[in-house]
Image (cartoon, rainbow, N blue to C red):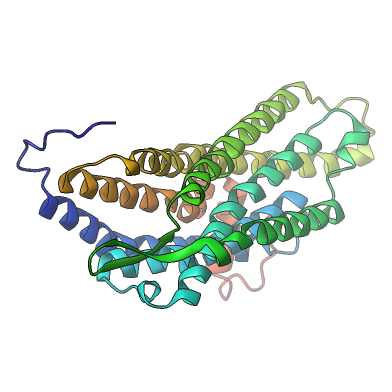
Length: 328
């Protein structure tokens, strides 16, 4: 990837730096506020008695908890560093390594919680009763614990190989150790945060859609019809919310790993200052876009699910609706 000619007056180092700083100093706090509201309201809705017994709702709760932690433990330090030039990691190695560890961990957990939710939707929409029995809260709890523990241990390498790296004289940042580790991290990020979620989410989405088309309620006695209909309606709405969430994540999550890989491949070539600044600009934009899917869940859910909208109205106007029953 060779140098390009910076001929346009718009593509200059000061302009690129200005865009980066303004994006994080102005857009960063806005995105954090939007994401915080989204995660908290989602958690309040999915914690309702009728929903928290649903395995898919448990996955949504885990997704929103990890998304909220991602915003404050990973995205907020990036906002402070790029938008406000506040970076304790440039001189505090323990903080530097902890920040990257949490960044690795919480960038990974939400997509894999979505994968678990998509697996649950595939199970519950199956026409085989034995397969549907695997969709239960006990199984989901064990899977959530296993996924979390695995990635917590897997990302412990950050406590060893993340370091304070001097890029220029007098300019040091908290970053990957140069050499083999930085190359492995770039490929790992592409595979774990890009390819694996894309393939698994797409696969289980297709299987779920196929099951929904095949699933037909027949030979059901009248006494059971209403219960099955209500359960089926709730599952369909949760499935619709999940499909929109998956679509949003697929769009945004693949950008950052690709940019990171390109930047690391080209780091051993000699480039102009403009080209290096353009690399930093791309990394900043991709970092920002990486966090967008974890801030929009509430708003996509409101568009997709009528029942979800009723639940949100119930929570907001709880005092006025105290004597009313929870919407079905």
